Length: 182
Image 1 (tube, rainbow, N blue to C red):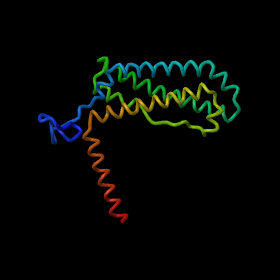
Image 2 (cartoon, rainbow, N blue to C red):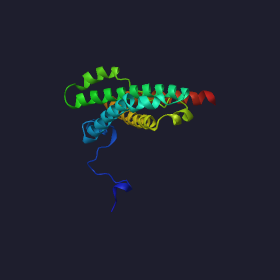
Image 3 (spheres, helix red, strand yellow):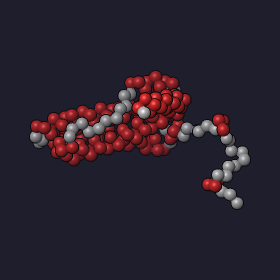
Image 4 (tube, rainbow, N blue to C red):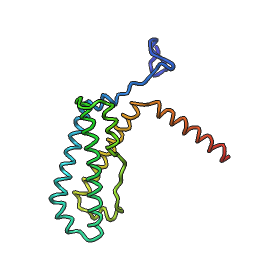
C-alpha cells in the first residue's frame, strides 16, 4: 500500500498548470487572529501614548544629555511606527467590516507608509534609556514586522503574477552577472 508521502497522488488531484494555490491570507485578515492583532496594536498605541505623556516625561528629565537626545529620537520613532501600524490596522478593519472595498483600500494604502525600522541609537546608548521605553520600542518593532509580513502577503495574493515576473527578471539579471563575471 502506498502513502501520500511515497509520491502517491489522488486520481482526482489537479496536476499541471491548472493547479493554483488558494491565498489563505484573506481569511487570516478576517479571522479572530486579525481581531487579536488589531486589539494588540491599538492597546500598544494607547500604552505608549500614556507612557510618553506621563512617566516617560519624568524619566527623560533624569537622563544625561546623550541618552536624553536618544530618548527624544526613539520616542518620535516609536510614535511614528505606531501611527503607521494603527493606520494599517484601521484600514484593514474598514475593509473587513465593509466600510471600504478592496479597491478603495488599495487607493488609500499609499497614505499608510509601512517601512521597516530599527532602533536608531547605538546599543550602549539604547541600554541607558528607561526600561519602559526600550520595552515599548521592541514590542512595536515586533508588531510592525508582523504587520509588514501580513501586508506583503496581501499584496502578493492580489497580484502574484507581478511577483512571478519580477523573479523571472531577477533570475535573468543573475544569469547575466554570472556570464560576465566568468
